[in-house]
Length: 307
Ligand SMILES: O=C(O)CCC(=O)C(=O)O
Ligand SMILES: [Fe+2]
Image 1 (spheres, rainbow, N blue to C red):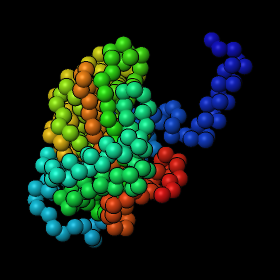
Image 2 (image 1 turned 90 degrees about the vertical axis):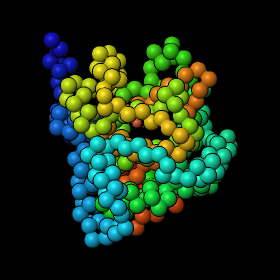
Image 3 (image 1 turned 120 degrees about the vertical axis):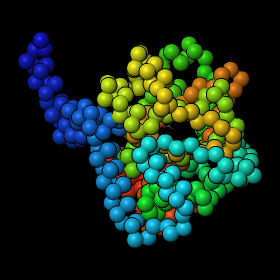
Image 4 (image 1 turned 60 degrees about the vertical axis):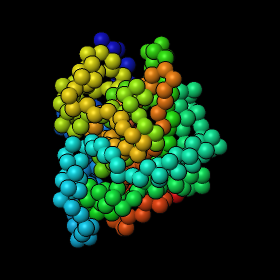
């Protein structure tokens, strides 16, 4: 039993924390895992679903007219499942050119957070490798406008080159998002991952579960990326697990706040090169040539974005 003083101190500290940010304190995280079935937290889910809904409503009057039934069905499936993998949507020549540019930019403007990863953050894209925005061709953008139900913006992103990590290092802790997690972002956010070189299962592809499978696993008790036991084995063997393998130019769309996912670890001598962007619905027109701030992040992640 804690002493009355300790108890009072704890209660005061809880009250202070709760008052400053109630949604991140008990019981909201627990309720959120039950109700929403992911680890992103109450605020990210509640505000994210409002953001999604309002933009779909506002976008109704100017939805893109030109689209086939196939695109509509694919966009609907992505809204339901939160994961979709597409090949052949980007011209291989576009990928070859942007890969050369991005690798050179990573040399000059990139960083190495550890010996296992080279990183190029998106604030360097405009100056060092503007070609990355070419992945948003008419097909990709049209599909995304159908997914969001209106215009969208490109908020952030990165290029990452990930290398093999020895087993003893992995045991000590996470190296590069290699444990099953959902990202702390509003659920209105969509990530687009693009492979810049061919990738097989031995190259450490991203793995993801779709929304229904994530809900099941989280409601059964998976609560944190720190977990390593039986629950993670179950996730690994889940039939809904998708691996982002494929030829260069393969795209994976992932609702990273609603779908459990993790990085794979390349086998010895292998590595992975991939590009990612974080997208949000917006009110004005779609402009995929530059990064733009997403207003929702002011409320969900408490950051003022200045571009
Ligand atoms: O490296 C990966 O495949 C996953 C990265 C990830 O989880 C993230 O960027 O949030
Ligand atoms: Fe992630």
